[in-house]
Length: 307
Image (cartoon, rainbow, N blue to C red; front, side, top):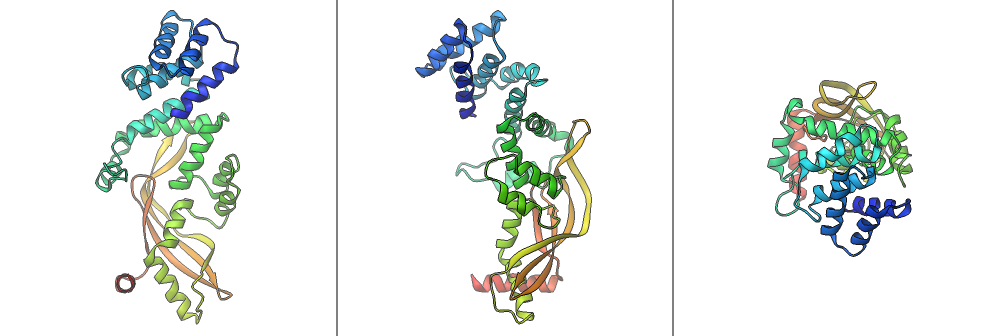
């Protein structure tokens, strides 16, 4: 969000400025946030502020620049603008998203697993800020606002969504340097986002399961390249964060389970493994090879011995 403050300032410099905006820009150039805040607040109070100045003032409140942090004041400024302004929608969505996921990280900067699990258990009713944030950012992206598109691309690479592989590929092609991601999304049919796919392929238990398939096929090549993904048991028990667009759109998966068959290629042969997925309540999913309890225990034991 710091970068957005600067982007708004640059937008003001590039436009035809009047006295209030010149004063704000001058203060920002000097790093005098207190003066910039006071000037922007005065402009808003007088009724002469442009949408850009209102958004800049909202960001001062959001980040506590030149004033104390005041999320309610920022939201009050942004909500009227967000009805039609893509940038305001993006700012408001980002603020609400941050608020919904606050304290997710522990003191060490890593995700607090207990907090993550607790947030994942919330009902849809308890997640209105999170749902509304996703709706604002997605609609801003639909309006063509580039930073919002980049966030959507990041979201769909990290979260299980209702978007098809073709829809995800279309979004990736609207973001910078994402052509490889687009092609990967068009490979087979999978609900798993790209980062989850990488996590699965690097998982020691899944790796051991594939290696056993390779050994049974008399293949000694340990480099198994994924070539296809297919949903072998459809999603059940699904609950999504629902974007109230026209038409309404299911977006991030919160609850549900499904199975996919992943096919890898090595030694000129195709090796297929079924994997069970269960949504973790935070857009991600837990996974495990779809094998018997005895086989799963054997896989885990083999991984433990190799550590």
